[in-house]
Amino acid sequence: MKVTSLSIPEVLAIDRDIFEDSRGSFSELWRKDLYAAAGEIGPFVQDNVSCSKKGVLRGLHYQWPHWQGKLVSVLQGCVLDVAVDLRKGSPSYGEWVAEELSERNGRQLWIPRGFAHGFVVLSDSALFHYKVDAPYVREDEVTVAWNDHEIGVAWPLDDPILGPKDAQAPSLSAIPPEGLPIFSPK
Image (cartoon, rainbow, N blue to C red; front, side):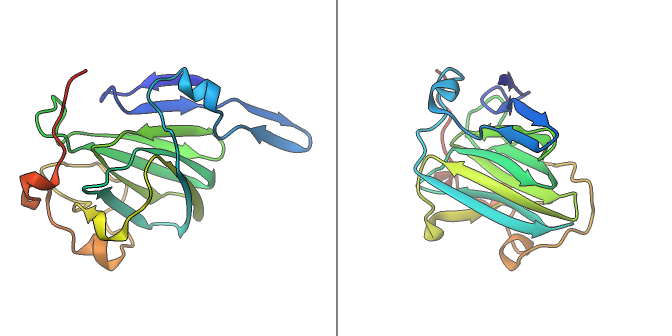
């Protein structure tokens, strides 16, 4: 396993070991001792899976006030995965990072609390896995516009397939300040 900090250092790319032979492949999605060595990842309380077809964009989502950290990976297919820093006072507030996650590359992203998350499906379909450190609370889910010009995510398509919530999401500047986390340096 290899752990790399991205341009927003709290967001981690994790390259899992994948063992392949003539029968197929094997990989560990999570192992407490290995991930503990990578830093503050988890502890986890819930796993989620979504299945989406090509061109579906889900995001940019976060929970407030019950924030979630997410360890995300793709079990089948390929996505462009995005994390946006929402922590007021952070040197990277409003900035984003993106990584391609696929069943082939085995890459995971650790997206800590205080970030919005989204992805777009690049393959015919994708089976997406979320391992989260706080339970999902539907009433706490907040959505930021996927195409917010102030954030400027470079999505690889102009006309994604969106759900109603994502299609009508406000810009980050329209979110009340009390609905965002405050950055606290370590």
